Image (cartoon, rainbow, N blue to C red; front, side, top):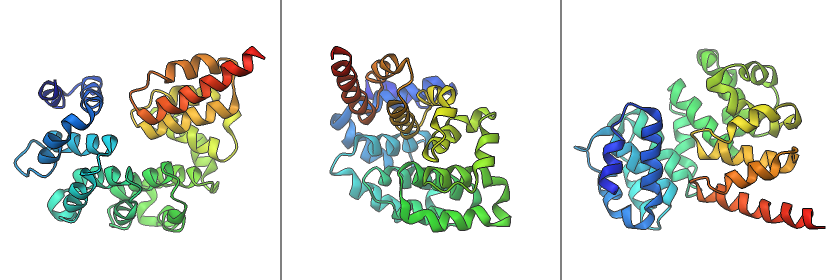
Length: 252
């Protein structure tokens, strides 16, 4: 099954690629040795390496943090931007946020924007000042919506107008919705938060689920029940706990 899923990573169809990733993650510890070897193999296909790194971050095996850290230490010049970002994101799953902060400070506006959003989704408050500086940089102006999302996720509302405009942009909608919720506007973006439950990033889905559980729209039981089938273990656990609370409340 693992090798079939790895072949799926080469698909140009986004849904097939995402399904392959989720299949690999679902294999858990049994896949870790092969994934660790792939992650550090310079001759492996780039999609295989990136997928392996992503899965290692999601599986969070005790042995993988050291492998990922060793890979990170090879540096941006050797790894390239895409793999560097993937490694930094995977290490963040171990609550090691130094790599993401390093990418934020890399001077590459695209990588910095991606790192800022991940730091925001992980709620790394210590990164707020650096993200704020990036938001204000004139040479990063075209990435400002992404830094506005990161600021919003950390409770800084200076980019609120940018976030509201972003709700109309498909590629930004989900992130802007969860950021606006963090700023206290969740009831205004219930429609968008529902869409965010299907986002490709499990952290976006988790933040959307947390928001909806807090807001308790009329269809919350159905939303939470569906989330219990999410491929991400954190989302499953959050949904299952919420479903138990809601069911107890209904029985009273």
